[in-house]
Length: 240
Image (tube, rainbow, N blue to C red; front, side, top):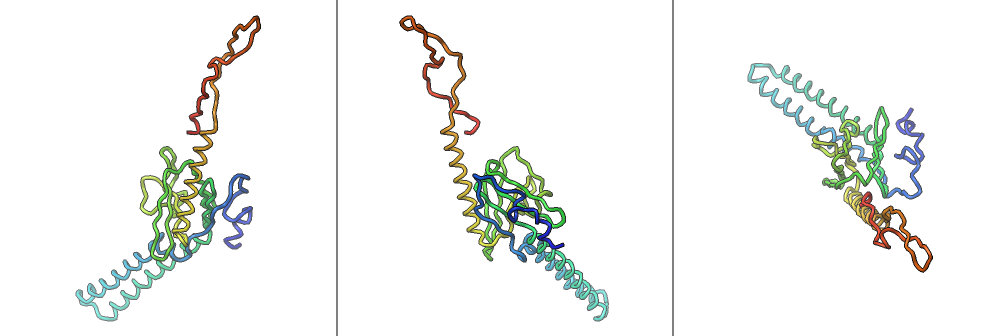
């Protein structure tokens, strides 16, 4: 079974179910296949670490009187082990990338990921405090969002799709997406439009204070009037 077969149930790639009628997709994409391995799994640092070990073993071996053959075997062994580790992490990065789809709608961010256990994480705009973007030299970008106080998300539920070096609380992120600046602007515009729509909805939604009708006598007739006598309506603070 291929990796894509695991998500054959999706009505739209990256979405566990159909979107509501008032929601639309603004952007959808995946991490860069090979850059994710370098950045998320730090393969360059690991390669540098094994290289330093190999070089230091040369000086250490000769200082302790080892012959050239033995030193060469040690260097080759360290480089071989380093190559295995880096290769494994690069393959892991590739698998993570091909099984990840980021979907940005006009109401939320959806992160579908998982190599062995597919899952989708929904981040509604109403839970987002701010968004940040880091664009790398290749043009790929890490675009993360910070959640409002009281909203928690386990790092283990979204790793490696979280802001790098963020340990005080998970910050969901779209990692190494191509054309990062463009995607960041799309998210920024969507958040701004959503905030304006929420403000407009709150301004238009009014709730009158409940009151017991009073009765006043006018020329031997009785007519009901509101207790507030036509006072201005009270805004509903639930949407402010």
